[in-house]
Image (cartoon, rainbow, N blue to C red; front, side, top):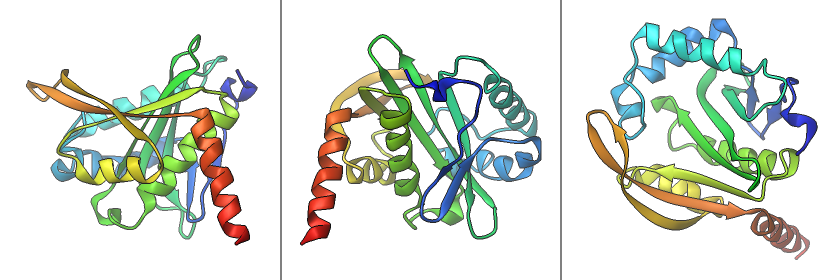
Length: 198
């Protein structure tokens, strides 16, 4: 594995966004979307109390201090004004198999503008290139059509339908399983480069 799993926290950038370390002062921005019922409708957490959001931030800040990192949580901030508009993560789920998972969440006013696609693409790139993962997967609620479109758009394939996979919000919920292999990412990048030459 790459030394990016060390305690040195990477700063990731996309065309419009910065994915950076959480800080305590992010609490109001994070809580604004974590407490929004519409935002968390298909997510395994929320709507949060302020204490729950605070505990989440404290946990993420504490976890980044580990010498061997297997979980990377990022605040999603606009490059233009540094406003925090969401969060995302990539976690190594099985180091032996070189497998990881990704997830993302955006404040409602920033839906439908391509930000989730930028974030998810950058997480895949970071996972395959910096963390040397072989396979990256994502789980999605079957009713979360917007998230499904993002996962398909970035080239992930649906591998399965997991029935009653997760106990969430008082009930067993199904999940869709999407995944991508490192060679598939390389193929996509090669095809993209070839298309630019035409």
